[in-house]
Length: 152
Image (tube, rainbow, N blue to C red; front, side, top):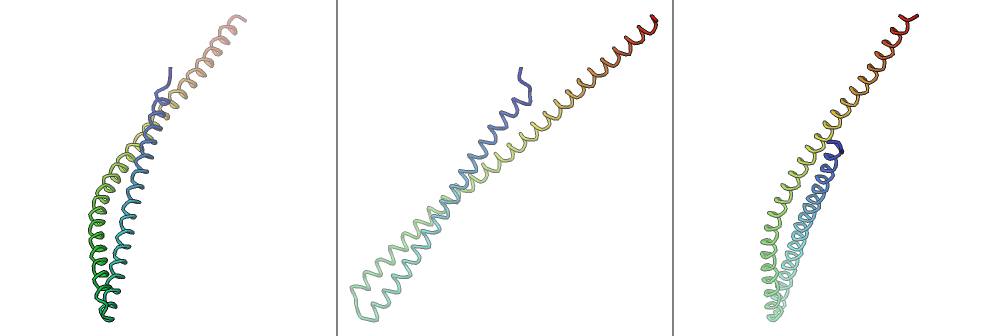
């Protein structure tokens, strides 16, 4: 028969694995938010560069280049807005993943505490049994000596 602690230790391992999975999902969602931030920054840079090119084209009187740079700037700004929407959705997912990770971490810590308490209880019981066996041996010897000393 398996002890209660060994069963709890197996359950604790499962809780630890679930915690690791939630941790990985959380890290992945954070990485996706960072990726969206980088893409937004890139699009902002491209919009700024297109605006600068458009102003230079206006100064030079190149209407065709100005129209092209204006369209490029507007496209970059539209992409930026789309990316901001994507980022907000990813932030929501990150918050959910963070909450799930925290909850699994708490459950894992609680399970560790339960395992430790169970181990301590089993150790206490084993110690008491060992002491009781030692006491029984002592009393048996004492009784045996008393019986044999009376015979002499």
